[in-house]
Every structure is written in structure tokens, then in C-alpha cells.
Length: 497
Image (cartoon, rainbow, N blue to C red; front, side, top):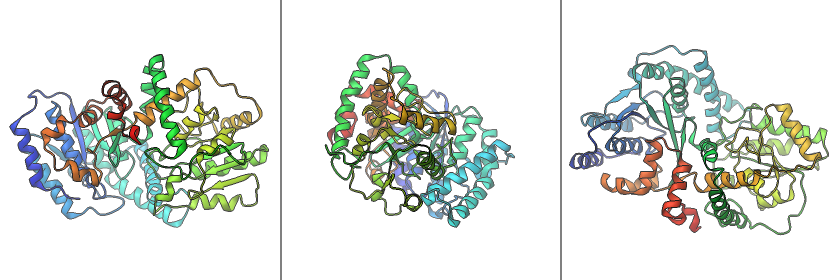
């Protein structure tokens, strides 16, 4: 995906015609790479120009190291070089990672590279189920990551930015940059995007929504905010029950007749989605979690179990169903385990209604289950894990014990649990994204790439993006404040779904 240099020249001319503040505040480093031949590098460059005009000192970090998934396109590499040279004449310097003096990594960095290689292999293959191709991909990723790690560390020994702006946080070399920022005391803000929306995270992977607890602690004592969160959340949740929300995940409307009753429900994530990558702490991966937990439930309890593959997966043509197929084969002889694949004409909320205990990985549907009065036991540190409505065990044995207790005892919810669940739902599902066409998605780039720099600056949605990516504000707080000031329909596009 190219960005005509002429277009960048026009942005620079806009900047020169109406220059921003002369004084420069804290220095922000902005990561540039080919990023699988997408518009991400051009998006990052324009972000740099906009932040420069807001008074920040900006420099670019050009990651021209080998990509673990595909060779960089020579044309795009040449265009990035030409663009950065043009920007350097405007005073925005850049570091080229391949030219940095290498620094030997310590054991911690080597362990992180191994972890990231495994996550990148799952991201590519869409499943943790072992197969020769997965092992080969893991090895190739590790070799590539280790090959570039000394130069990445060389950058951090040469530069001292106050903050670092980074896409992803897991894929390709971005995970190494995230880890290096943390090791060197550099605040890092990551971003992720979908069509017409963007999410951000401070010192974490944006898709993990780890900012939510920080904002919750600021708002939990505000009864007016809790009441508003519940009011807005009830409308959104009803749309999801009916399958008419913005995402249209559910294939059928929620039924008043829930059919068979289940004691336990496992609502699965999309395994290679950034929200799920790197979150397991009690088990090696989702395959181990599901098999060990299902074996425990079948051996130690009389509970019936439903496993629901994420319904969105039916829209993914390159999905890998190996995990579901593995479970179907393993538990084919048990009448206590029912597995609903992504094509099953069932509403997941019906399964929640019919269950007693919900065992999520990191799915946000766990928050909705808590609102619906179900016991939720997280297996991983999702953004909601640790609150009263979703207390997370600290060990595998503790996890199994919590499941057994939930199935045998009458659980009395903490009075604060429902309030916490509604606030968590509002902040994550209503305020967790900025709805804007200013994203690196190709269809969005085709729109904003035609706008002037001045026009982008005047856009309140772009301003919200810059507050998060430049100023380091929590995205859910930024969006909450905008909703209070501008109104729900102006800020949250799902309000009109």
C-alpha cells in the first residue's frame, strides 16, 4: 500500500503554511515498518506530523529489519526511505534500526523472544494445536527475532524518548519493542484498529484492554456514572441479545426457550486475535486449558458442559478449526459435553441463560454473563479479572477448586459485583474504541488520505486519537468524557445500530 510522496509534500506544505507551536515538549518516538504492506507506515508518519504540530518533539524509528512473515516490498521500503528523508528536512529526524550498533541481549530478552515467537506462530496458524507447520513457523520466527534483537537494543542505548508509539505489540518485531520500552522505562502506547475504529493501550497491548481497571478505580464511587453505565449498557446488551448490534455476532435472536440446561459454559475466543494472544498464565495454551479442565469436570463432578466456538469465526475464510475438531474427537464418547461450532444456529446468550457457571478465557461476554447473574471464573488476566464479579484464582489447583465449589455451593454475589460489571461493560464495550475513519485500515486510508492536515486537526475524533496516542490518556476515559460532553450518538457509532 503506497503513499504518494506528492501527498506527503502537501501535508508538509500545510504544516509550513500554518506552523504549530515553536516550543517542543516531551519527545515521542514513532515506530515505522512496512507492516505486512498495509497503510500502517503512512498512518504513523501522519500521526508524527500531527503530534509535531501539537508541540511534541518527534522522531521516527524505522524498523527495516527482516519480517518473520514476508519479505518487505522493495517499492514500499524505497517510499519509506524517501518519506523519512523528506521529513528530516522539516526537522523530524529518524533512526534506522539496521544501522544501529548491536547490544547483546540478556536472558530476559531471550525468554521474551521465545515467548513472542510462539505467539507469532499461533497468530499465523490461527490455532495452538500442534502440527509440523506450527513448529517450523515458531522456529523461523525465533530465528528472525533473535537476528534483529541486538540492533533493537542498540536503538535504546542511543536514544532516550519519553514515550514510544507502536502498532500491535505482539506481531513481528513490535513485541520486542514493547518489552524493550518497559525495560528502559519508556512509556509505550500501542494501537490496534478495525474498520472505522481504533483502540489504544498504555504500556500494554491495545487489544488486551488493560487500561480499563485504571479508569474503573477512578469512577467506581460515582453513583451517577454507574447509573448511566447501566442505562446505556442495558440498551446495548438488548441489541446483542437480539442479534441486531453493530457487530452482528449472533446468528439468531435470543429465545425465551433455552432448551437443554448446562452446568458449565466455555465461551471461546478467536485464538489468533490480539485480544487473546499472550494471556495464558495458568495453562500453557488454550488446548491445555480446555482439555485439562474438561477432564477435571468429567472426572470430579457430574456437571454437563457446553463449549461455544466464537460465532464470528464463521465469517473468517482462513480460520483454523483444529482446536474445535480436537475437542469433538476427544469427547465424542461423552454425553455430558456438547460442542457448538461457529456455524451452529444458536444464540450464545441462550447458552449463558441455561448455564450455572461461565468459564471464559478473556472473552468480554464474561462481563455480560456476570450481569445476567452467572458465576464467572476467569482463567487468565482479562481486563475484568480480579473484580468482585470475576475473581481469578492464582493457581491451576485453585482454578479447579473454584469450579468445584461453584458447582456445589450456592454462590452469594458481592453487592458491588453488579455495579462493577455494568461499569466494566460500559467502559470496554461503549468507550473502549474511538469510532473514526482516521485509522490505518485500507478503506479508511482511502478516505482520510484525501483530506488536508488542517482538516484532520479540526476533527474531534482525530483529536481524541491524539489525546490517547500522544498525551497518553486512557482511551475509555477519553471516550467517557466525550460522551458526557458531546452525547452518546455522536461518539459511539453502535448507538445507532
